[in-house]
Amino acid sequence: MRIKCIAFVICFYCSWCAFAWSATYYVSVSGNDTTGTGSIGAPWATITHALDSVEDGSIADVFPGTYFGRIRIRELSRKV
Image 1 (tube, rainbow, N blue to C red):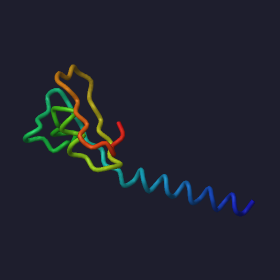
Image 2 (cartoon, one colour):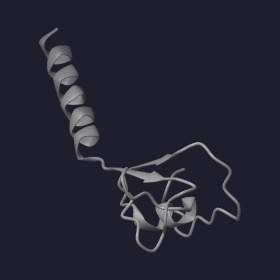
Image 3 (tube, rainbow, N blue to C red):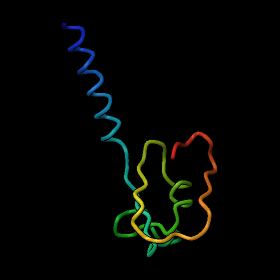
Image 4 (cartoon, rainbow, N blue to C red):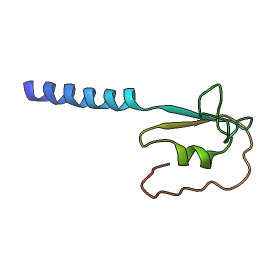
């Protein structure tokens, strides 16, 4: 029983740390890839730019809207 409790604590800690260290970036049809920072106040305009800019483990939150163009995933190691 003690081993199960320790395993649970380790799994909980690891999942919490991964969540705590992940950053959230934003994409909006009114955003700008040149001047935007990916923040909620200055979102990027394209999903492709977000995929190229965020580090592994980050979240790209895409606001509702109609996005035109192609989405290009340039690194095969990233998950979408």
